[in-house]
Length: 302
Length: 155
Ligand SMILES: [Zn+2]
Image (tube, rainbow over all chains, first blue to last red; front, top):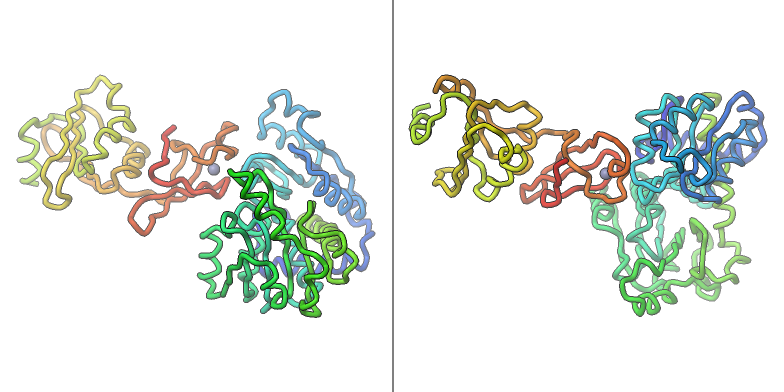
């Protein structure tokens, strides 16, 4: 992975994902190692995403790296009309690796073509967000002891959530059985379902959340956004149908864990947080270890 | 060869290119794509000609012009069945089928309004694939979205 950009999860092989997860495990045991003291990490956030930026900056800082960059494009030369090409070339003079978030689809791929230093995509528009997929895989493996042969349920907006699409596609490498729970308007796109079929795996579609709870090893919850509905009445109808409450977890398997890419709105009630099955805050923390593993591998120090 | 000669007799050209076997509905599109409505050369075209192979076909003749490979690629997107015949001194110099390229650079716009190629000065790049019904679709190497045949816009 040394010097190789990560724009889409498919830029790395399954074998490389596993190497990263193994390395992330080591960082979890020992997160403060000054192995990047001589490196500068640029974090270019052309649109704000505090959560993702803090996770990357925490990962880099704990490894001793220095950070340069900007937190949104209004405070940078981008506002003055500088091209993406020029911004990337300029910043590459001052840093060893670029972490970028950008509102346009395909911006990270383009940056990786023009940049002399490696790029980590921290989200390009509605397109890719590969470090989210890696931290999801890490969280699943950590809580289940394996990635293989699991029953994984995805709940909520399966149509527009890129997090869901990338994770489903990655899980197709691990003999997963998929349980897809969503309103009819927000079903998983056919190209993702086709990918499941091409791998000879099974998926089941549901409109009721209760049905799926006893079957699942993982409940992956997502937010249903009001903007996705043309008719606000339709939104009002479905918004409460995909809310997970603690009382619904009685029939769940012992090993069940609940994941959510955060931020949540109301799709998991607060009373779930105290349940040991709730894993979404640890999931976010795992992002730091995965990003440490990624920075160290691409910079070639691990 | 004889058959081609017979066809060309009607309005034979001394030098230039004949684009044959164009789907009849695509003739005007080919004219626009190749910018034939804005050139000084003599252009003759026909639609709804009988064709053994295709039922109805279109044909375009352009005097004193030979096309570059990248221009030919453009035709392939709307007329994959087309044949190019280059004429020199009333003789057929070269006859070739238009081939659907595996990749397309530069001259097609990505249909995704949020694609970075629509905001920055970037050469577009697409992988070409064929759908079950035979239609072409283009996969943007930047934003990972497909542009269907009917949405293709030439830059
Ligand atoms: Zn595109």
